Each structure stands twice: as C-alpha cells, then as structure tokens.
Image 1 (spheres, rainbow, N blue to C red):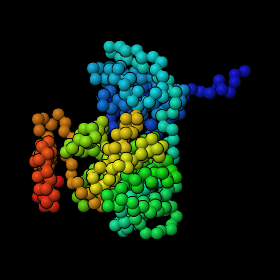
Image 2: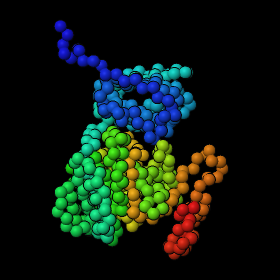
Image 3: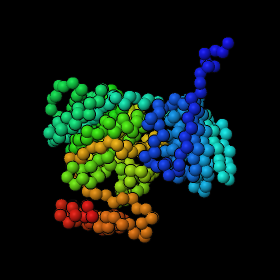
Image 4: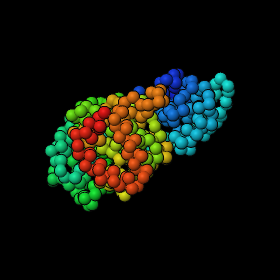
Length: 392
C-alpha cells in the first residue's frame, strides 16, 4: 500500500516566455503563490543581458525549497552560460545548486535545485506600516496624507510619524517625537526609527509631501506581494510631471550631474528612488538600514545608498506601475531621460537642462572655477530663467 507521502502529486509549471516580454515590469508570479511549485520549466529565447537577473528572480521565486528550475534558453555573446551563472549567483545568493548545465550552439539547458527560500519573510499584502518623516512645518499636509491612507481601506495598517508633530491619540497612529540635529535634517535617522518600530513586514516610508492616490492599495495587490524593494508612480500636483519616481544616478556613488529618468520598463545598475518614497520589506531593511551619516541639507538623503547596498546583496529594486502617489511639491523639476544610442549622437529631450548640466560638470572639474560658479549658482537658482531650465 502506497504511503500518503508517495501519493502527493508533483506541482509542475510550464512557462513559455518571449524574450521581448522580459524587462523591469516582467512578473511571472502575480497570479501564482510564491514558492509553491516542485518544478518550474521555462522555455525562452535570447534573454536581454540587463534583465537576466529579473527573469531569474521571478522564476526562482515560484519554486519551493528543494524544488527544481529547468530553463531552456538560446545563448549568444551577451547572454552566455557564464553570464547566466553570474546573474544567478548575484540574485540567488547561494540558495541553489546547479545540477546540470548543458551548453549548445542553438539551445542551452540549466537545471537548478533550490535549497532555501528566496525571501525569508514576505509578510501579508493586507498588513502595512506607513511611515511619515516630518520636520513639523506641514501638519496640514500630514492630515491630508493620513486621510488618503485611511481611504485605501487596508484591513490592517499603522501610521508612524517621526519628527516634530502635535499629540494625536488615535487608532493606528504612533508618534515618534524626534528633533535631534533638526538644523541638518536628520531624515535617515528618522527613517530607521520608523522601520525599527514597524509592526508589519510591508513598509512604505515617505516624506511629508506625498498623498496616496485611491488606486495605491489596489495597484499593490495587482503587482503582488513578492517584492523586496519597490518604487511606484509619483506625479507632481501642479505640473503633472514625474517627481523622481524612477531614476538612475548615471554612475557609482559620487557621480554628479548625470541623474536621469528611466522609463518604467527599463532597469539600470545605478537605478534608485529620489528619497521621498520607499516601499521595502522590513527584513530587507534589517540587512541594509539607511546611512545615518547622511542628511537632508547635504542632498545626501536620496535612497541610492540603501538601494545600492541592497543591490550588492542581491536584493533588487523594482517598479510598480499600478500604484501612484501625488507630490504636493517637488523642487527638482523635470529630469532628462536616460540617453539611448538609438537617439543618435545627441539626446532629443531636455536640451537646455542637459547643456546646463554639462557646464556644471565641466566647472566642477576645476576647484577654483567651481567655487566661483557656486556663488553664482546660489543666486541663479532663484531666477525665472533657472526654473525654465528645469523643465526644458
């Protein structure tokens, strides 16, 4: 007589994926529960190198620990077997074993055994911690933000406000009274304090100028709960322009005057969020933290630091195009799109702002000129001409 264990049916999933489907917005598991399949078989073609890690993450996340991922793909010079294994090591973080990797001229096949869960704690989609960083000057905006969160009708949520704020004894609201180094804007410390006190795994930490649109929670449910770090659409209220929601620094930490917008389907190794919103699992925050040596007044609070640190540990920032927030203010204007060689020798958008940044990079290379330019810039940024440059 067969034992109950031997009767268990193998849960198998076959995915036929066209290479042009794979980009930053690719999701393989929104309608399927994470880490539930014994065997996932993927048939695809030449996977774009820049999105290899995204595809591997999506497919591995479907496989349960001790299960197998079988991938049949078309190799080329950019997506060789070596490149695949490098991406796998980066994103898989050693939580797998390669059972076989057969490389052919027309097709290659790799078989993996997953040894550990990809994400230690996914939390629950209907449980959220919302953190609001404030300096005490926008109580009316915070009231508006709280109303927008409550309107989402999330079953379980809490709101943690950190900074200078009035007493408010209401259900689901916690206040962390914090005014240390207020002159410098110690917002990285405030974000860490919020995350430390968070009761739920899913956290959305914002500055006190973002209002949640009515579609936000519905859009999160559509995107799915299998994420580590995430951005969403941010639109400036008055101009209806993007408010720094999906950006690239253009180079490693320290790179200046190369910040660009990314299209939502694009992904960049130096991609990051502007700092005014971060959706993140608490278990990922515990590995990375915000760097508390960075302050608002030094323009060093942008979230590239925590995002790059997470990236190097194999935790990748992604983008949710189904949820949105409205920025009540945004001081950086419209940023140029990342240049693509298909545009030709010169970029086609934001010509005036690009010229301004090119001049700034040149002057920054010469300390004496840079000091003189800085004195001029402090006055120039207050003029109408500068504001015109911000959007053209």
